[in-house]
Image 1: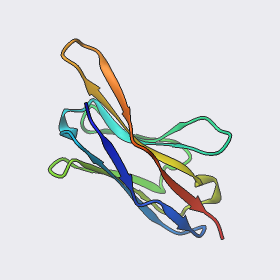
Image 2: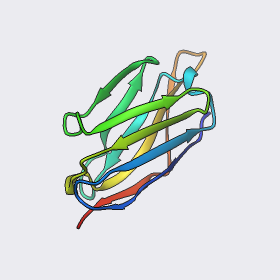
Image 3: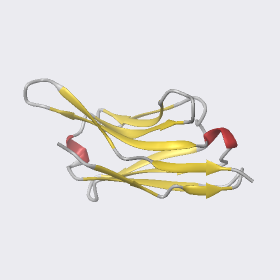
Image 4: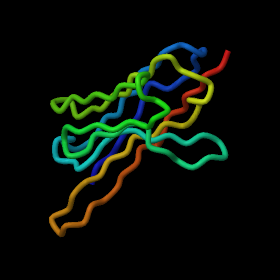
Length: 120
């Protein structure tokens, strides 16, 4: 089992930057995947940026070139640097992880979410 705690959300003007951080209670090196999703009001939760297989990263097309995901295996943290923020980036951002089980099953875990609001 892994607990995920996000921090760093807030209110920022269009064009501004924010950095989100996710602290995991387990070694992120052992996870199949870890990263960020978001959910805007009235919309489905969508993937933002994700590490898979330890080193591979993938980003949503809407954030490519603006957002950067990074990890610190020693601290068990995953950060999301968000630059050139747009009003459409407004959402609750969730940290997400997938933990493998010896049975072969893979279990998803979610953080509680942190609000990001981009508005002038």
